[in-house]
Length: 508
Image 1 (cartoon, rainbow, N blue to C red):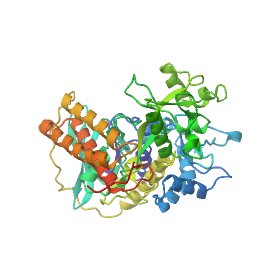
Image 2: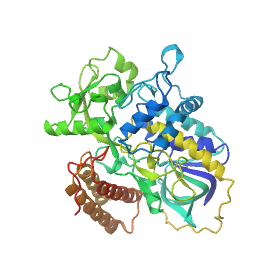
Image 3: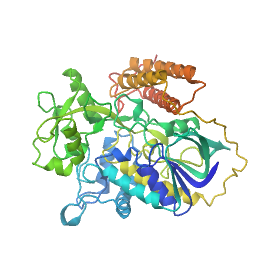
Image 4: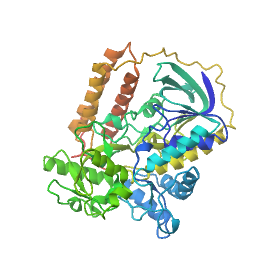
């Protein structure tokens, strides 16, 4: 058992922003499921939305966010985030992030779908990677931050209905341990791996959400899972590579297999419409044309533009034999961002005292039914810092003693190759969620999904009762996320944002 002032589970922009702010006031443990850089943040390409132009305004950014959220955003949370964005960008610059420059050494501002102004600060097409590297380096060098890599959170530790710590599993040794702290922060990212096609890394299995749910925390808006319309279609690989929306902001156009554009038939903003609209349109046209994918046309962009401004995308396409400057880029929708999550206030507090949630695992209310492009890194940054300020102030409050706290015993777990039966259940779950709880939904499919998820849960427990491997813990979490998501979908009777019903839900 180890003691810290703060423990942060997750090492993306939200978790590291909290850690770096809190470390000036106490010892912080940063728990990483893989290596420190392996986060959703690292894969974020587009950028961070912030009002930095004289022709832009907080009000415009707020209204764009509210519009994308289809009327279900918490406006107070949106304003809180938007108004803190410029100072947050300056804070990142102080941490060493070198954003692309425009004229007269000012920060270059890009345009993305749903935004009425150019307000996306970026580092080429690898903004998240640059942010991750800068914050990761700062965290490793901070004397008050301890990084625990290859540790998975198993359960939150509660006493007197207050969260005092977390039980961890070392994924290389199989050894279980416990960390007690004055504040526990979930920054575990999303749960994209619950779907067959996702832009999320393999570690995104909803661990934080599932732990919070088992601890009794309030969960909301899980029916709103955002599907990104343009993931690179590459049937030769299981990995899904994101084609940033910023490429469409630079002028690339979505087209059908015959090369004709179509998005103007679905929305006045065409290929730069809100993501839920674009994803459904792409999905619909794929079905209409019986095609496994559609295409992104960037051939008309200025010569050298792709290589200079989107080097990561250009080189990835090149690696699979596609010259994006001269050929169409094959794309397909994929699960991208969890708009719902663990409910929090403006300071990241959950309904469980002592437990905070920041970043994608949290539901702050800023995204509503559909996240506006490039508001995700911003949300993690703003609320990570806000939660740290609140948690630091909370240190002055007397906490109940944890000296006599009983920590549930977890035997060491044998780290071994996953059982084929476990892999089979995971594959079936992901396919089920994609087909029946995906981009479009029906009443019949949702009721079927509810029953099938429960059957898969029972199957898992029957074959793994005596062998709780890391893969089993992950799959249990995915099944929990799936069950919560299906119930949320059944509770939302009308289409809105990322929750689209082919017809109204009927009661059974």
